[in-house]
Length: 412
Image (cartoon, rainbow, N blue to C red):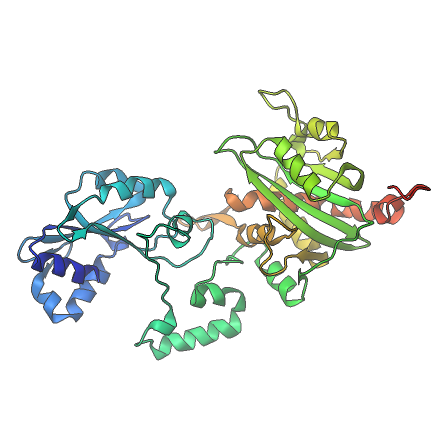
């Protein structure tokens, strides 16, 4: 269609560039060049209009030329390109918001009855991706969204149909993403991928009730304030004998501690019914306000415990503890629940399903957990699993953990 649109421009006497872009393009081998060439070869009228070389595509009349660019390294050079008639961004899921901010203003050409267009194609992977919020959920009347799938391909080959059926049978956890356009819920190679699939198959992900007489355990991963700060993540558990009920999950970026405390109280996780567990930096004072998470939460009357630094290999220890305790965890994640309004662990499960190892592909070695949006929720979850054995032991002897005490007036 990019080649056809270029042909239409040329027939109308309009001259300019068809720009084909991707987030990552180290060379033309990584571009859409070969795809466009094949498309031109399949249509005789296009083959007659375009001159196709080893590294270029241009019309014989000199009006239309194709250009290829990677947005991660050459986004600035796009500003200096000539008259861009159409920009097609393929495989757009990883394109950053900064790239869109730079790219879109360059598409300013317009004429009689036409204007420069931006086409974006991608396979949905992460609902947090910039392309999702900017285009898929856009309310701008100038944005047109079309969803296409294997069902819409009139020439869908038998070979792909066999692969689809095989994925449906052998990789049900990946099928919805690969074939139906769903977001990735369990990333291939993620630390907890198998554990999550097993939990879903065993019915441990769904509607889980909280016990109104049981204590809440709140496990934090500490972030900071400011737009570029790490996120604060909180898992909310109840421990009943040897069973862990994961009831709620919270995550926020750049908010002060008072906001997190307000969320706790709104959800009913009040001091008398809650035990807070912080990582080792919970005692570290903020450089500006000279207050730590531990001291501020204690001032809010919460019972707080800071877990000492586990030293080298701390991340690996959290992951091992997480895998070991996963079979004992039930996750409250009803389908369709709005986590902003009602308790649900859906957001935390997404983080666990994404949490994966950073790889050095050239040397074929792992470099430890990838520090991205999922790592904060995964670290808070890992902290809970590190503390689980101690909580199990205390629950056997601490009546307050099993049932809250009431005085003669029926007050906790």
